[in-house]
Length: 188
Image (tube, rainbow, N blue to C red):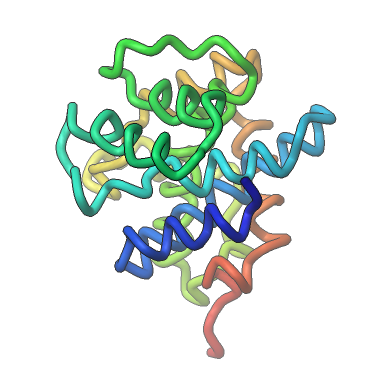
């Protein structure tokens, strides 16, 4: 499977522009880690792109991602990708064992949180986001309340990373892809 095929699956099942951008944001962070760790960037990108492809069909636990997995199997998505997608849900019963699985989990909620913070900045840009602003917003339970702070913290820990460098790494990855993510900012 290649990235174009994975993106076509996302576009077939995901109508929401914001959910498509979320898939791209998670892909951006996961692919950056693949480069850093000298892993298979194409495989990691496909995994990140597809991780929430079934969210609009099955927005409730435990249906997502369990009911989406057979759809991916029918489409020829490799076992390693499907297992990583299953493992990103704490309730799936699939433990995160590989670096890919831990990285997907670590980047999922954080990418969404970084996007939300970007949207409340004056220029609506990821370029205005820094680690200090992320840490401050993490304490504000009313902000982006659907984002699990525990998953952000635990994701970094599962990767063996300190939280602040993990946040900084994902910010930098998203800055490099800001235009595609819709986070380059708006004219003032």
